[in-house]
Length: 160
Image (cartoon, rainbow, N blue to C red):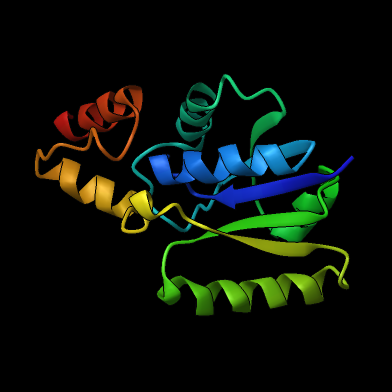
């Protein structure tokens, strides 16, 4: 069985993320969506909230598990039996950083873990979680960026 891991902060999950998850789940037998618990980064949502948002957004896809992790991605990938890391590319500007990370992960895993890049659907090439947060913080409409349920959670965070 082929297993992959799709890591990220997903703060919040967007339609772009859901697109990458859906397409990856068609390619691999098992897909782990891994939410990074980065204590150094200030997130809008807690790691548990992000895990629950993702679980809700992909509940109809049955070969997916959604978990949180800390530490080195390659170590966690080994833990869950994934030998492929999935990364989405929105634009050329993403490529340089992602290439460096994939080469680092290959070195750290002694070449046992590959990285596969999926181009983001053109409908979402401009979209990022930080864009969603910024638009929502000013009361803008984020319904074209995230699911209805996620939009409600985001707006509630900014009302507090």
